[in-house]
Amino acid sequence: MHLGIDIGTSSVKAVVTAESGEVLAQSSADLTVSRPHALWSEQAPADWISATHKAVLGLDAALRAGVRGIGLAGQMHGATLLGSDDKPLRPAILWNDGRSFAECATLEADEPRSRAITGNIAMPGFTAPKLAWVRAHEPDVFAATRTVLLPKDYVRLALTGEKASDMSDAAGTLWLDVAARAWSGEMLAATGLDETHMPRLHEGPDVTGVLREDVARDWGMERVPVVAGAGDNAAGALGVGVLGEGQGMLSLGTSGVIFVANDAFRPNPAQAVHAFCHALPGVWHQMSVHLSAASCIDWAARACNVPGPAEFFALAEQAGAASGPELFLPYLSGERTPHNDPHIRAAFLSLDNESTTPRMAAAVLEGVAFAHADGIDALRSAGTVIEELCVIGGGSRSAHWGRILASVLGARLVYLHGGEVGPALGGARLAQMGITGASAAEVCTRPPVRAVIEPDPDLAARLAPKRARFRAAYRALRAIQE
Figure (cartoon, rainbow, N blue to C red):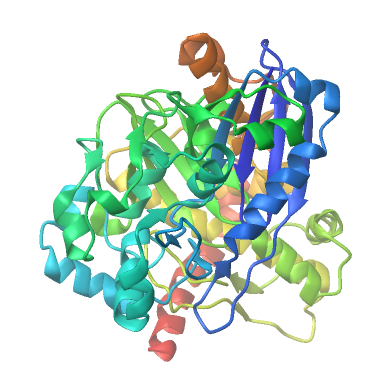
């Protein structure tokens, strides 16, 4: 058996898989996000550790005792700054933190080859601009920083005592030469750092260390190997068998991602497409990233006094797609693809005396779908062919939302058994590859299909006018917020 641990934004999830790939059990522990100022988003690294222990100990003891390897997955881009004693110097700055927007421009000016080296436009969500912000605004903290780790890699340090990372997660720092799969001295220097501040790099299935004796004792397992793992999106892709050229995935978690695997490095920074390493050697991927997806459902359910996401989806389906003029722009935390706009914020438009909670719920589902349509257009403009996407994440539970998404994206959506498990499954699969020597083709198979949703041309036609208004509304909203 193998254990996958996903250090998410809202929770840590632990999954145990059998040699056959079957998910035997899963457990989770909640996390909270701190937003002390506008644009800020932080977490205490200690919370990741305590939530990891809680999630793992939530699994049956007999299953824990049978674990032979561990794979880590996690939220990308988070800046965890450690001092000489390897303890955090401040709260971690998360992927959806937008404070470093000014530093992005400075970073690209200081290193004019930035986009050529990394294949990506500098965005506030990436790790390097966060360190530039700390350097400018918290110079004492910056001066004391000896190591910078991503969230899952800080958990690795606590579990094994080793400082290591994988290519897929490292690609999201803006310090990686993504084509060469190596740290870039030029990009590190642009933020006042060098390779001594970085963990050593591995491919996803590589063993990076073994479980510390005290952790193994507490968890009731042997001192098993821990593999490098992957960033959450790459891990989620492995969990649904997205390995090679043209295979794609739609992730509907806190954020939303359209992920397409590539057999070569194909950057498109002009439209804020992410071009990163996959978690497997010799494979890359492209992503459109949307900072708010299922989080919009959670927010709107609270705002409308709806008990939860399931009831919210039911209200939206009751109203039906394109049922009214209501329009929702889902930019609760800004947006990445294609706008790279940390300042834009969400809005409801065209409410009238006939607006109801069901119609507002319908508008929220449509608005998130329209944002993803902007992203898939950016991917296709780079020459990427996208005809089918496997769906993962909490949003995969709503077939009604799937019909809207398939129609506005112009892509077939494939729903898989266990698709809601997400990145933790990919972590477990990487552990199995690293421990057994099995290939990705053998281990990372696509789970059985439970449903397929084809695009509905009639629904797409009915939604097209609202999408045109959505795009115009973004431009208008941006103008009044500047």
